[in-house]
Image 1 (cartoon, one colour):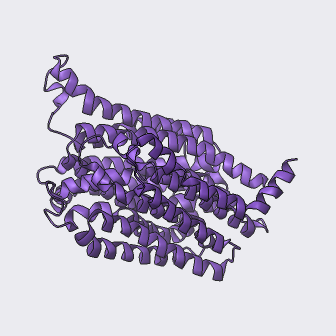
Image 2 (tube, helix red, strand yellow):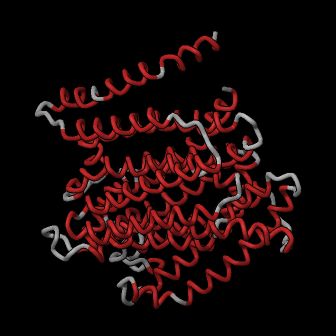
Image 3 (cartoon, helix red, strand yellow):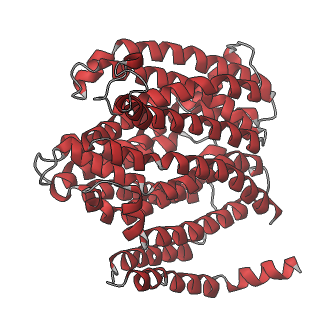
Amino acid sequence: MSNLKKLAGQTAIYGLSSILGRSINFLLIIVYTAYLSKNALGAFTGIYALIGFLNIIFTYGMETSFFRFATGKNLSPQRVYNNTQSLLVTSSLILGSGTFLLAPLLAEWMNYPGQEYLFRWVALILTFDAILAIPFAKLRLENKAVTFAIAKLTNITLNVGFNLILIIGFPIWIQNGVIPESFLGYRLDWGVEYILLANLLANGLIIPLVWWKAGFFSFKLEKSILQPMWRYSLPLLFMGLAGVTNELISRLLFEYVLPEGFYPGLDSRAAAGVFGANFKLAILMNLVIQAFKYAAEPFFFRESENKNSPQLYARVMHAFIIFCAFLMIAISVNLNWLGPLFLRSEGYAEGLYIVPVLLMGYLLLGVYFNLSIWFKITDKTQYSFWITLIGAIVSIAVVIFLVPVYGFMGAALSTLACYLVMSIVCFYFGQRFYPIPYQTGKDIFYLFIAFGLSYLGFYWNLENEILGFFLKNAVLIPFVALFFLLEKKEIQGYLSKKR
C-alpha cells in the first residue's frame, strides 16, 4: 500500500502541473473558437497532428531508453544522461535543418500554398521540443516532481500569454490606436500563424530554465552506451510512430477524407476545425493518463525487481480503470453545458455526441499503457512495434472507410477501435511472457457499465435545466454503488489497516 501511496502522491503532483497547466492551455479553445475562423481551427488541427508525428521521429524512443539504462546497475545515471542528451541535441539540429529546408514541399503536400513559413516554424518547434525531452525525463527519474511541475507550468503560462497577446491583444490595441497596424509586421488576417509563434517563443524561452534545473550535460557520444540504447529504442521509435498514427491520424486525414459538402455550410477544413475542437473536450481524460504516465513509468521500472511487482501492477491497473471510468461518466453527462462553455461560436455543438467515444478511446490508451509494462521490463520492445502497427492499420482503415460515411463519428471510432485492438493484443502476449494477475472480468465490466451510463446521461435531456443537471449526474450513483459492492472486501481491508 505504501508503494501505491507513493505513486498516487507523485501522480497528484504531476497531475497538478499537467491538469492545471493543460487546463489553462485548454482554455485557449475558448479564444480560438471565439476569435479565429473554423478554417483556422482546421489548420491548427492538421498542422499540430503533423507536429505530433514528427516529434516521435525527433526523439525516437530515447526517453524510455534513458529510463531503462539510467536505472540499471552498470552505468551511472549522469553518464547515461550526458550521452543521451548529446545524441538528442545533435540529431535534433540535423533533423530540424532538414525539415526547415523541406518546408516548401510540406506546404504543397498539405495544401498550404505560399505558406512554407508555417513549416519552418514547425521545424524550430520540433527542435526545441526534442532537446527538452531528456532534461524533463531526468527530473522525473530523480523524483523532482515539484521542479518538473514548475517548469511545465512556466512553459504553458508563456504559451497562453503569447496566444492572448497575439490573438486578442494586438487587434484591440491596433483598433484603439495604441500601436500602428503594421507594428512588428503584425497581420490581422493571420490565425494559425499566431498559435505556432506563441508555441515557438514559449518553448525557446524555457530551455535555459529546464537545462539548469536538470543539470547541464557534458557532450559525450560513447558507442558502448549509445549502441545498446539505440537497439532498445529503435522498436520504440516504430511503436511511437504507429502509436501517434493511432492518436492523430483522424485529425490529420479528416479534411482530406471527408467528402466536400458532407456538412452543409462547412468546407472540409472548417469541418476539421469543428472535429478538432470537440476532440479537445476529451482532453480531461488524456490529462489524467498523461499525469499517470509521468509518475508510473519510472515507478514501474523501479519496482520491476520486486518479487511482488505483478500483483502491484494488477492493483494499479484496477484502480486506474475505476477512477477513469468514473471520470468518463462525469464528463459525458455534463457535456450539454461543458460544450457551449468552451466552444464559443455556433456550429461546434454539432460534434458533441462523439466525445464519450473519444473519452473511452483515451481510457483504453491508459489501459494499454498499463499493459505495456511487460515488454518494457523484459526488453521485448520489438513486440511494441507489431502491436502498435496493428493499431495503426486499424485506425487508418476506420478513418478511410467510416469518415466518408459517418463523418465525425467515423473519426472518433478510429480512436476507440485502435486502442481496443491494441489492448487486447498486448494483454494476450503479456500474459504469455510476463503473467500479471489482472482482475480482467471486473475491469471489463466497469468499462461496459461506464460506457453505457455515459451515453444514457448524455442523451437524457429535460426542459428544466436545473432538474436535468441533477438527474444527469445521478447517473453516477449506480456506478458508485457497484464500486462499493464489488470492492467491499478491498475497502474493508484498507480501512482495517488505517485503524
